[in-house]
Length: 228
Image (cartoon, rainbow, N blue to C red; front, side):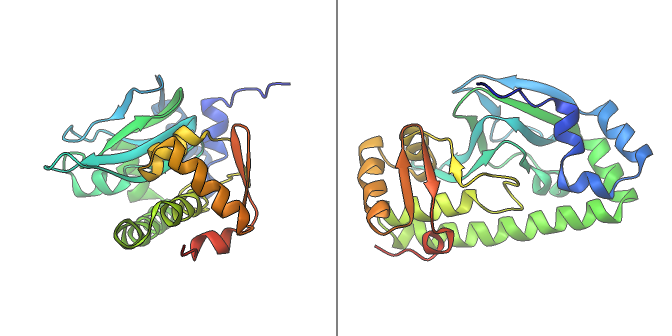
């Protein structure tokens, strides 16, 4: 039995920040936000382009990444359905500093810059939500620098999985994560074969259960602190 695809309006009304808005503010959001489809492999956002929207994932899977001058791809994190991103770029008023690529067919919600700043000016609750997002992203990026330099593939996969379960950055995620080993490889910068071996190691440690087309998280705290 297949689930009914989430609508844009339902995604907006169920967002954590929506509860703090007045009916008039929510009405403007629903009137201004548009939907965009990005096929698997397509760019949701490109590094160097002007930032015109705050972006939410209605459904699908995205990765935030950047390519260094030396040609090395650095993946920052994955973005799942229900998550919002790009607030830092809107606040700094600079071009985007990273690419966002769809790893599977994805639908996006696009809130115009003017609406985003209007909410900041008129909603204390929305302000607090954005501040929390910025703080959580800062912690994530600090951790990323640490585990990218100090951990092997299994350790990086453990931290990558744990990062997906940040309740602020990816709200409402289920412990039974529908994600392929190839997609995990894209997120943690490893081949599918290495991901397969690392998942077996994490299974042996009692942290996850690998299944066809997904992973069940058994010990989230263990993933966050795992060292191989």
